[in-house]
Image (cartoon, rainbow, N blue to C red):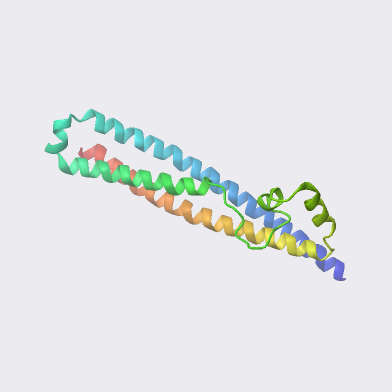
Length: 166
């Protein structure tokens, strides 16, 4: 009966790890989509700036303020979308046998030795730590993604106002 419970926990942790890994990939895909929309908005804003003569910049200060607010929001949104894509390191103080950064810091023989010394029940702890690390990374990515999305929406609104008003 004890082995059955261990197998269930191990399978559950593998399932959770797979789900969180999928969510990480989805966050990256959404961030790339945000990059595409922001690229279009940047192009529209730069085109609008180029269509105005330099003398018009001072004659239409409200238009210029709106354009620069839009550009500022686009840049901020780019920053947060980039944070989603930027690789995260393990946030645990303990070395993990399943995290690539920790594995690559070991010599090959060291890693093989550590893995071979893992006791039966320890694999649950190793996988649990991996799930926790992945979840911590996913939480940070989704917070940055939410901020990038909201800033992107405000950028879109300001860009539409710029295109209509300016």
